Amino acid sequence: MTGEQITLDSLPIGRKAKVKFLTSDGPIRRRMLDLGLVSDTVVEALQKSPSGDPTAYHIRGAVIALRSEEAKKIMVEVN
Image (cartoon, rainbow, N blue to C red):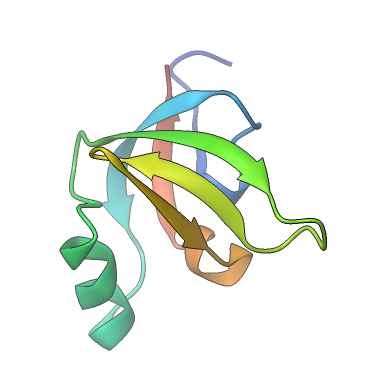
């Protein structure tokens, strides 16, 4: 699974990946960029909520919860 590009919502809990690009546009894209989801940022999937959505991610020293519909628009490369 190393070096493979997947969407962030497919990243297994406990794994890290690097952001490659965003497929979203408009205000959602701006929000993702403001959260620090720029190229080569390391993201770690921490845990899913009890209902399964959203998922908590460690991004640049902060824990951010993203819904799967948002995470599907973020392409990452698994480390």
